Image 1 (cartoon, protein in one colour):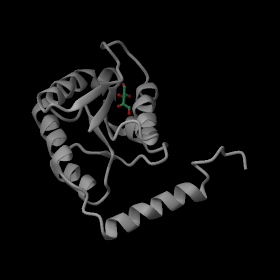
Image 2: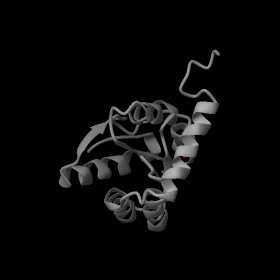
Image 3: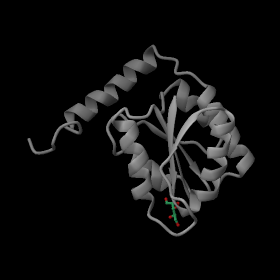
Length: 155
Ligand code: RB5
């Protein structure tokens, strides 16, 4: 599995910690930046990661900003993306089991390093349950199609 990761300045330190964790887990990690703590705009980096997940170029993504809210708003604009803001373990687990979340968002100013790394471990280790939850996810796809999110938007 390849995971794309990105942050803004408020999530930079935690992004570096998570990249380190992914390396120790031997998970292929595509770091979409930023490369330092300079102030940046979260839509730029959230968009890079979300676009890769949306187009199926990577299986999963991880995004970190200050609260996780901005990155969540950006990511869920992209078709096929199911981004979940998980600042604790229960949500991390449920977002995989029930929502098949393909982008994990964490608030770097909310969660300490140790909990954040445990959230990532839990999110990666938890499988989607399928069944009735798959039927609900298919309804999200139908909404995207009805809104013409997959099309040009010009029809
Ligand atoms: C940056 O100051 C902050 O606004 C950003 O990291 C994020 O929390 C936005 O939702």
